[in-house]
Amino acid sequence: MRPLRLGLLASHEGSNAQAIFEACRQGVLHAQAHVLISNNSRAGVRIRAEQFGVPFYHLSSATHPTATELDAAILDVLQQRGVEIVCLTGYMKKLGTKTLGAYRGRILNVHPSLLPKFGGRGMYGLRVHEAVLAAGETESGATVHLIDNEYDRGQILAQERTPVCPGESPEELQNRILPLEHRIYVETLQRIIAGTLTLNQRQK
Image 1 (cartoon, one colour):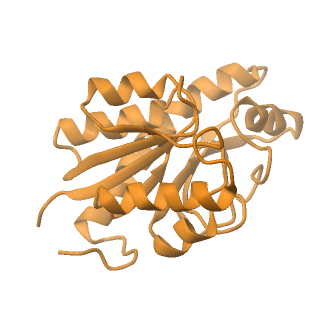
Image 2 (spheres, rainbow, N blue to C red):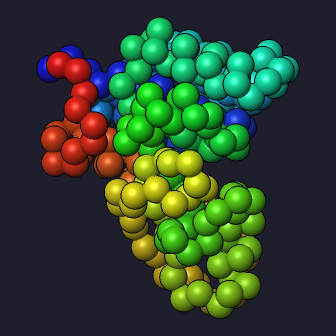
C-alpha cells in the first residue's frame, strides 16, 4: 500500500507538525505530509514545512474574507493534494462545515489534557495547564481525538497520563506534556496505518 497522505493545519510554531514530519522522513510512519495549511502567514511552522519540503498554504480571512469562502478554499487544497487524513497541530480556528463533512471521521487533533477535562472553546496552550493546576489535579496528560463540530468533543482515540508534580508551574507542566503529545500523535497514526485503529475507509 502506498504511504498514507496527510494534510496538516497549524497556526503557530507547530512542534506537533515537526514530530509528524520527522516520523515520515525517518520511516517511523508509512506516510507523507502532502500539505500544511496555516491561517498565519508568519507562523513559525512555515519554516518547519519548508525544511521538510512540505507545500505551505496561507489561508485565512485575509485571503478569503467570508467563512464560507475560507472553508471552500481549505477543502479545495486538501482534496487537490490528495489528503486522506487531516491532522490539526495547534490550529486555532474552527473548521467549516464543508471540510468537516468531506473528512468526517478523518480529522485528528491532539489536546494537552485528559479530555473531556479541560477542553472546549478558549482552552488551548498554557491556559489548559493553568486550569489543571488551579483545579488541584493530581494527573494530566495528552489526548488524540477526532474533530467534530464541537470543540474537543470528538471521539477519543488515545490518551497518555502523567502525574502532576507538586509545586510545578504551568510552563513546567507544559514542557513535560509536549513530548507526550508528539509521541501519542505519531503512535495513533501508526495504528491507523497498521489497521489496528479503523477510521473511514481510505483509498487503496
